[in-house]
Length: 482
Image 1 (spheres, rainbow, N blue to C red):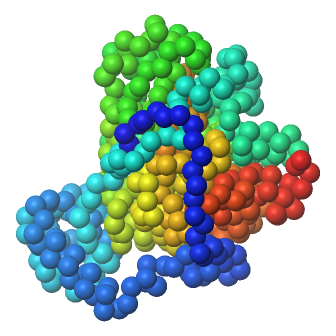
Image 2 (cartoon, one colour; image 1 turned 180 degrees about the vertical axis):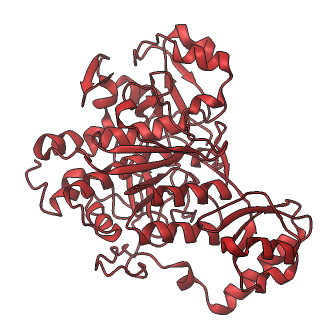
């Protein structure tokens, strides 16, 4: 996302003709369908799907990439690979998801009854890498940061944090403090899996909230983001004595993120990967809204913001199988994927609430997984409660929105940063889901979504902008919010 800073302005938006419907909260365990947004099968005729499948297979035949995601029964993977000339690159998989390679595609694989799905191992990226050209901000960087109160160190649920992290425009807008003071709900007992670039496991604000995660890139248990830095840079960052949010010096780390650092640490951050810190930032926003929740960091992205379908699918299954109640996903893929859709459906079948960024392309564009049925797709709003100019919008693209401009959050090395994009709106909603689940532990994903849908109306932003008091009041536990 190319960052631009412009003066604050009001956007005149024309409302859509249709309103998004609610989730099916019947609790009967069936897949959610047309009571919220149309499923993929409802968008295409059978003939159209056949044509799409044939075109996709043709694309595979012409595609030069030789890595593919194969979904099949683990006890049949060797037979399938033998029949179709595939080389198995990964071993055991409890859900039958394998990475394979081949230099030529056997067309009969599309009719093999043992093959659930077979597709390119496509690249994914965080929304800030989507290439949007119209991602100008509706508020300037200076005005957002100048509006923050003076920096002090405060205690936030047992951890020393920057006061500018706890008290900022985003928390005021969503009425976080009102809810915490009135209800005491902090997400206690709920686990939120954050699929991203990893996390700074030693950050003072997050350390006590973290539970065991995984690094799917290296296949190790340590999900630390610091592995993306050179040893010298990682050591310098960890040992820095950065003044927390002194507000005097801004260092642009990449096209979408501005870290607030003291001048003394600028030199050590001259060369990190483009999206280094993204995971620590998103985890910090989950923790900001739900400080009592556990955070499960799942590193499926490198520090440059890149990942692939295979690692994302594995991370979703891992989260669902290892106790996650909510999955926060600040990434997107342009086209639907059978393997990704099946992983999402598996998580939903285990009553995991799935929250995903709706993208920064600035249009009525569907991206995945946010566009899948029963996934809570999140857009971005400004601090003036209009849609951000960079966010995707519209009934089919957005279920709910949250502040996504100049949101202050944690950053590796004990630092803090401000981020712009739907990546930073999404974890605020994931944190909200944790609050709802603490209040109503038996709720299914549709019930949680219905509560979240009680929001402040913003044109073209689905049900509107998150309001924690309205959401909790709708289930009978937040009516005391003023």
